[in-house]
Amino acid sequence: MYFDRTLLQVRKIAFNRLDAALGTKLKHGHIVKSRQYPFETMTVDTFDQSTNTIYEFRSNIFDGYPPDHKWYSKQNFATGRINADMYHDTLLRMNVLYEMSYNVKYIWEHEFRTHEPECSILSLLHNYNILLYPEKN
Image (cartoon, rainbow, N blue to C red; front, side, top):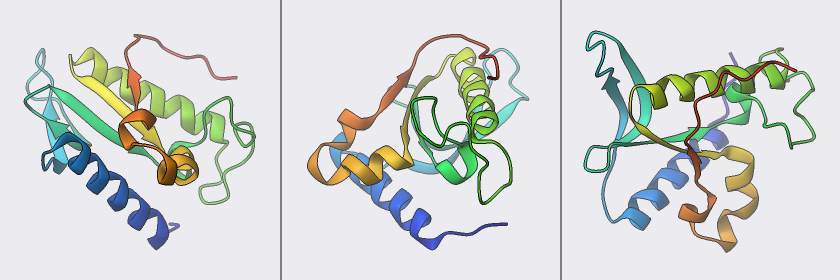
């Protein structure tokens, strides 16, 4: 399995900046439970219980690229899978969290790496607020 120390460092920087921007210290690697089915759980990057919000850092190595990215339809060098398929799986996962009644906010690795120095991390967060089952392209 591909291991990128730089990715882990970037992820840590992103969450440290998020903690600072929110004025809190979020728990990382939090386990959330389904309200409808309490025995169902998922591990998420961070969770703010006071706002019922999950924050996720979507790495391009494991989660693919969104459709507007030039590598969306290409094969992922680390996993061998097509980035579009990985993106589709990522959306389905976020959809499950959203259906579990959590607010879901996420940031893509490539956006953070590109824009983070010149803007607030809060401006880079996306809200996942639609129920959908995306079709694969």
